[in-house]
Image (tube, rainbow, N blue to C red; front, side, top):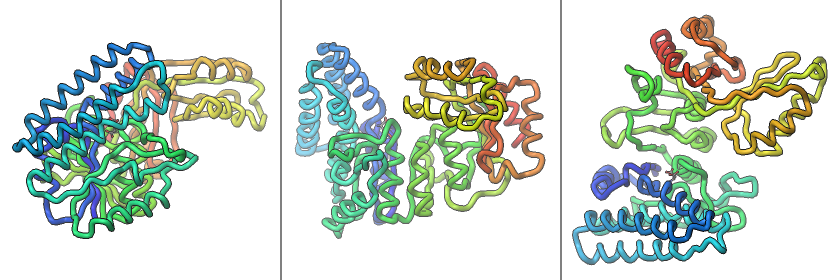
Length: 436
Ligand code: ASP
């Protein structure tokens, strides 16, 4: 069994859904994981925001707009009245639900329920289309098997048990369609795997059933050696190790959700990135093996805030860094990069929701300096921190760019550098020219 995941653009219109069917209908047994149609989750977020703000009629108008889009898709997608009615009937239920919420009784639970509607609709529409064309595909309800435990991690035992049971109900079936992103939490409430989480769904499913491989279908020929939106002349990378891919996914390569690598890495299941626009292209194969060349790629993560805490009390003290970390833990704010000197610690965060409170607490330890609009530039490769001369090459390339922080040796697979965002393009171009 293979697991194939298609993102929002692959189901973004009636035409794309028809094309998608051509890619997935063959004899190979597979589970197809779908995102919501592109734009839907953003619209659902907008609806929840309006409801939270008490703007009931604006929320209703946003629901109407979304419904009109879906009505157009249904009108174009199906050939027969029977199947058009079937699809319209399913959508009606979802839109009735979306209209049933009111600002007076609106909590996180209702919000998560609203956010789950996109994937439920896209998978239903695609499955009905396949059935209309005589393909006996089966819809697997992710809300029945995809569950998180108390630590917010996938409950792999439960997922495996239920999924295998569901699959066994259809021994003849070779094409299963299921929802990415959505799940239940340990209390059984509808929840999700965070924005972009459909990749994660696919790799969790693959690990749970011991799939042969996972394919993440997107609209680019795999990971590129640099960000094609920022620099010219990039090329796709044919092979990456799981570790290299995780670093790239985390540090800005939008192509893959960062957590997605974890389940397949643990189960050693190869993961492909493939291009829906160019299915013949090789793409990127992510596995336990790496490809040739020490330096694989450069990626960047924007909207980073750097925080420096300076204190003479740090000198020869122990427990100081733990106390600083505890502040971030208290406000559930992950730290990306960290560097220390004997009297100062610099670290970066991308979540600034609780920044003021965090800075307030940190001031108890000493002088605090905050810099916004920073970018982490990350150079990723195989055993990069152990290869002679590579660091020199990186720093030579960046000779003209002021660097605020350097993180080297933390992992064998990356060198991270913090620069002001205004220098991002220049830095990425210089690295492109000098490293590849
Ligand atoms: N539909 C969700 C989102 O837009 C999940 C996904 O597409 O992966 O974030």
